[in-house]
Image (cartoon, rainbow, N blue to C red; front, side, top):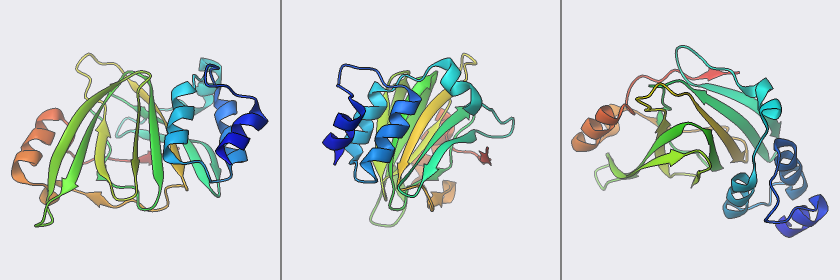
Amino acid sequence: MEQMAVRQLGWTNSAALGLRDLIDLMDIAGGLAGADTIGNWLRATCPTPTELRPFVHFGDDGYRRNLVRRRRHYEILVLCWRPGQCSPIHDHRQSRCAVAVLSGAATEARLVRMADGRLRMDAVTTLCAGTVTSSFDDEIHVLGNTSADGHDLLTLHVYAPPLAHMRTYDARDLEESTARRLRHLGLVRTATLTDG
């Protein structure tokens, strides 16, 4: 199915995709595109400023989720983050998620559940423009704009199927050294989510 979608659109791995192309690929794939394929399509997606303009809206009290397209088997959003804004610690409850950093730099911390139920940090990564990351189902992470230089962050997200439910966690769920490190990074705070 994934190859059929690529053939129908006439896309080759060397060609850059626009936002419309990504939407067309997701529509043609009909929910059958795997996480690796969606990640590859996101890596190749270079939306123009004109394509992005309708979806670039920031929130003053938290990052902003701006819907590009929602279908039964996927949704695409542009997330806009001011410095210091971060997501809650969360998983994706039966959705595949792929994220491309369009501009700025994101900090992502991945966490794992320990035997006692608390969360421990597994890895921290700085994701620069052009970087793609992905997670699935019960994988736990937090993402944010920890920029010290005042630059805004734009990310492009694909959830398949649409993110209907995500489990969120707070500092009480964290192993103590993980809580300290996430606070130091600026990734644990009360995060306000604004849907656009």
